[in-house]
Length: 252
Ligand code: 13P
Image (cartoon, rainbow, N blue to C red; front, top):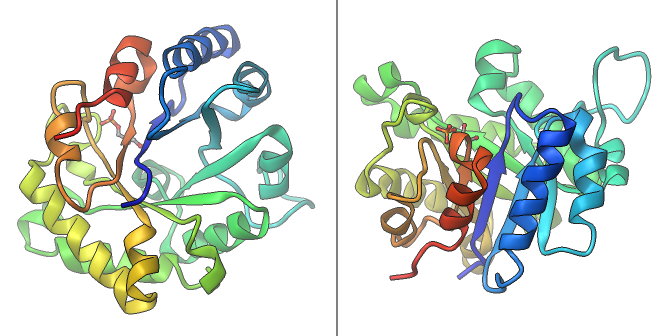
């Protein structure tokens, strides 16, 4: 079983002082954690401050996005090497909010996954269906397309660091979580797709996170599912107490 990963996606929240205080509280609360990994992804402008707080702690740093060129005339963008030199070891790619509001597509997501690998960052590739797609019975097809297309630029040796996050769009920020059965159905399909790309042992080592209204009250039942290897947490990661109770979920 891969080491579980509990990750906080702070989205567009946390000005620098707030971010620093939240990171300090998370790092302190994770001092006793050794059988799971914890990552937080602040905004770009808070990365340096948070990196200083996390230095020497057990909590890893992640970016929320990147551009695939290393440098050049690309106003407003941040590259993989820049994230890496800031102290990031992870980068979230293809979050549904980026696909919905900022034009990310399977094509650009694939370029970003390749760039993350090249920069030595572990890509957290997000996939997930909308409510309409779920109601039309298209969930597994959508997730398979996003996953297979998202991975086209990842060489075989990049799969050891890969993290996939299944985030049903209808569950993000709505308070409505996928049931463990709904989540496990998609997670096991994702595992099957990974098995068709990689050999079995390597596919079993890829962490598949669930995201979408994860809270202290539902993390235990989600983590009890065989193919759920962690969580990507939005709203609840902005509250140190809630995030730390998610990190300290009870194993069944
Ligand atoms: P919420 O936990 O706020 O639903 O957000 C999930 C998410 O989008 C994490 O990336």
